[in-house]
Length: 91
Image (cartoon, rainbow, N blue to C red):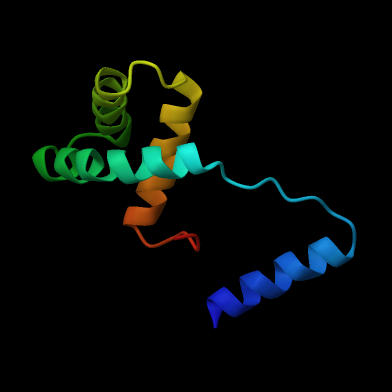
């Protein structure tokens, strides 16, 4: 039902002339690659602050993907956390 409502909203916005920015495939692949790192950090540091855990994932992401843009790694972390918590509707 939720997916239907999202699809309906997207269709309505397109019909009204709004342009939607798609999520690039490179970013989706980066999210998929960082998801295990996010889960591992969540397991290892459950009582640490979110900022500390994000920094740990960010540092590991920079080491794993040195050619990726820093903004993309940060955005991939945010999308990965949302995906882990089930708050996203894509893939």
